[in-house]
Length: 116
Image (cartoon, rainbow, N blue to C red; front, side):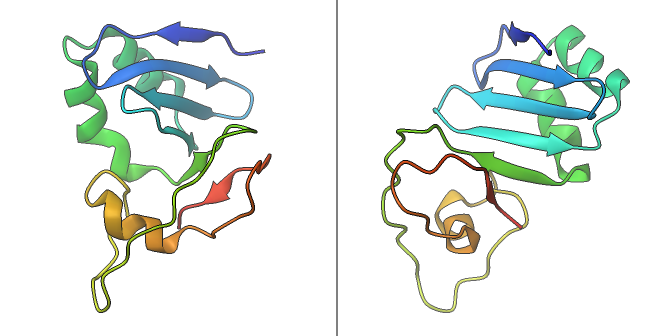
């Protein structure tokens, strides 16, 4: 099983890489967590060894598909959506409109919600 690694970063709290599945779970200090798919191990190592983990991840994250992870008891706020606003492909570019693409699930969701 993959081990959680705490990252010395102002943006990223921790990461967990699954070598068999090639998935990288990233927990951001803002409280959100995402699972990125098809991440080569050298990218994960680059994240751990980067002088700035946040800057490194910002430079490569858009190459990978992802899902937003939700904790079992995490209460999701209702999204505030502005009509006619385009939705970006990555949640950190515009978190407000990216929420429009998420399936609004019941409270106490236990499965990941697809963000694409």
